[in-house]
Image (cartoon, rainbow, N blue to C red; front, side, top):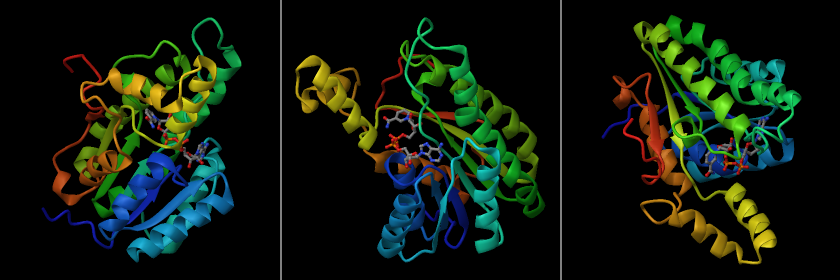
Length: 263
Ligand code: NAD
C-alpha cells in the first residue's frame, strides 16, 4: 500500500522514549520529517539523533513540557519554522499519577487537566487553521483503553482522557470538510520503559520477579502478551497516511483484545 506521506512534516509529542519514540520512528521510516518533543533537552536531542541516523529524515528536537500552553505552542512554531507547515500531529504526554476516588486530592485534577486535556486542545488549535488553509491534515491523539473501560486506580486518567476523546470527536466533525482527520487511539498494555518500571515496582511490593509481574498483566489480555510499540506505531502511521483519508472521528483500540465491550 502506498501511504503517500513521504516528505510530509509531523509533530510527535512526548517522544524521547516509549510510545512517542516508536510512533516517531514509524513515521520517519515512511520518509516523514519530524519535530519531536519531551521535557528533557539531552534526552530528546539523543532520540532525534538516533531516529535521523536510522532513517535519514530531518528530526528537530524541542525541549518542552506540553502541559504548559506557551511551551506546547512553541513546539508547533518550531516545526513550522523548520518545515513551513505541520501536516501530521500526534499528541501524547506522560500519564497523570495513579489514585482512586478516595485518595486523589482536588488540586490533582487541575494538574492532570493541563497535562492530558489542555495539551491536546492547545496543540490541535495551533495546527488547525494552517491545515484548513492547505486542505489536508492528520491528527492522532494517543489516549488509553481506559476511555472504553475506566481503571479503578487511575481516576485522573479516566476522567481527562475521556474528555480528550469527546474533544477529538467534536473537532473531527468541524475539521472533516477541510480534509483534516482526527482520530484517537485507545492504547492497551504496550511494553515500554514505563511498563518495565511498573513491573519492577510491583515486584518489589509482591516479592515476585518483574517478569512474573509482566506475565500477570499479559494473562488479562486475550492475546496472552503485551503489545510491542511498533504494533501501535503501525496503526498510527496508517491513520497519518493518505490511505486513511475516509477514517475520522474514531477511537481505535490497540489492545490485543483486552477491552470486552462491543463498541
Ligand atoms: P513512557 O514513560 O515510556 O514515555 C513517556 C514520554 O513522555 C517520555 O518521553 C517523557 O519524557 C515524555 N513526557 C512525559 N510528560 C511530558 C510532558 N508533560 N511534556 C512533554 N513530554 C512528556 O510512557 P509510555 O509507555 O510511552 O506511555 C505514553 C503515554 O501513553 C502515557 O500517557 C501513558 O500513560 C499512556 N499509556 C501507555 C500505555 C502502555 O502500556 N505503555 C497504556 C495506556 C496508556
